Length: 124
Image (tube, rainbow, N blue to C red; front, side, top):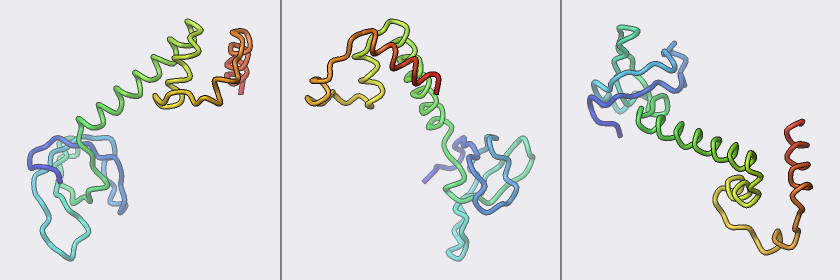
């Protein structure tokens, strides 16, 4: 549940109300009507209007910024691993930080095979 006055971003338009997706706004009230599908009333300054929205249509700005920062960090680490031919770092990033299984340690690739495989995937 979002607090009053929190800065949010409209991420969807579930009920096709012509919400300005991608714009920011502020939670100004809760819709306490039990018969309504909308949970919040938000003020969108760019549209100069208030909208009734469901919780699925909005997200906190801080949450979206942290997700974007994580994505950029992961892409930068992948680029670094490919540029330095660091196979261990590349595999750790692609597996989501999990350690390699003992079965995959048996399949030892040479450095040239690894580079060839990465280049092949880049062409696809």
